[in-house]
Picture 1: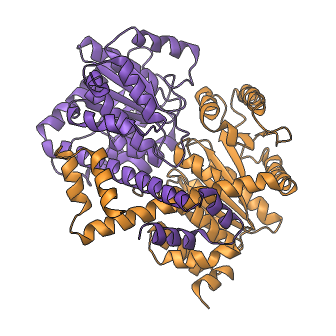
Picture 2: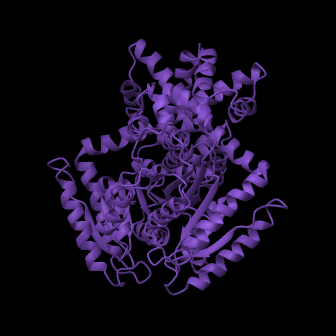
Picture 3: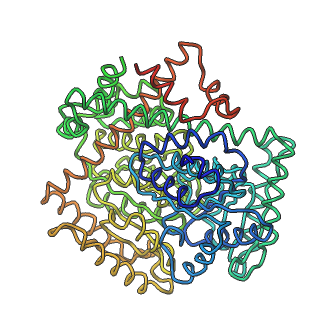
Length: 317
Length: 317
């Protein structure tokens, strides 16, 4: 069996190996990704995003368990340096996570976020495709923050869950300014804290304002209050996630939109990366290194704007 | 006078216009950036980063005022959707900011963070260059979060200030996982809150662990407790920022490293963007649109990996 065939058959070791190669940007990974692509398109991709400390990992953990109760297989991708999945864990978190390792229906993988020159969005999309081809029915993606990378990653999800906690007025501002329009479900976690109802009201106001800009028969974003560690609100969150999936299946044009965005991101990022690799290779063939060019800029022998134009005129003739 | 000459002479309207053109990715901006480049390299660029709600804007605001007391001219760039500079402001913040608008020694500009396909890092670097060429002696850059974009932007700064607040254990984890190594000064803001000393101790431990990996005669990161709204710790923060500048001036190899990283990022990002533009233009000349290609992927007529290779083989021959 080829590596791709083993992955499609659900082989955990082959999958783990490929994901590592993607993370390390090993060129041969691309050949396997090509073979896997026809086997993608079946998973429900759910993105969880929010600031560090709001409890995304606990929610992802609980949703994974809940999916398993319905016999749904689960893949987890953590693109968050603070996630217990990626190593920024306190002991309790780590123990909670480990129960998944004993369950072959759950596959967990984290991504480094310190790679150079972007590529994070592309890697995440590639990894989603791998877990999808591997047969995972639900893929939970945890990302931190409101940066552009995170927004792009969330663009890859079919269903986006924005997580906040009570009493973070600035958080709600962040949601308003940056990513309000991409949230399908809003979670106020740690809802036992003071101010939870107020945060819910603020979110509701923002959603109502936002709905004016949405399409007529669109999905009306839902708000759920949860206490992940005590189990409160989790059944409601799970049922809302499933409800959003049903909504997408009943409204194929919305699903198409999600797939279109993801394909666009993937294509553009891959073109940029490959073009850069090509250009650097051609420069090297002429005995010019990236370091030589950087030196010209730092010494002010050249300005970066003219230099880039000269290089591309030369190399992409 | 050319536009570039007007900017170098400190013309606020010409500068504002160019920054808007950069944000809107107007091609003619590049010609002006070329002319400005030889006039850059004099400003001290200070990056402030941290989660929403930790009080970065208040600190930036106070540092701007303090610089003015020393007759230093100031540029402020906010790459943060929650910043009062960018519009995510509550009324009090907005009023505080407005005093700067009456002071011609301070120039404030915010960047949108919702642009497509990256470019945020590049725009920020371009804008730093503009404010530098305009003669601003200190440039304060406010960014949110721990995403990759933010790390790249912080890489552009000579001095990086990481801001947190007491009692965010996960925040400290984030610092540990993602950006510990790039912080020159750590601020525990809102230090009147419970747990401030504990957060300082945690940071100190992380710094000591981190120092083992740093160079022998490196800069030892400083920790400052502040209450931005009450003025506590601000003089200490300001003096530490100035101290770090003096350190860089006394250790040119460290300064060179910063400049090298910035030039590298700028060059690579610009090459990618320009290569993409070139490829899309060539495709268009052959009657192929980006939408056609995306359609091939979503319909599974092609896989994105092979398609990108075919396109680049064809267009970059």
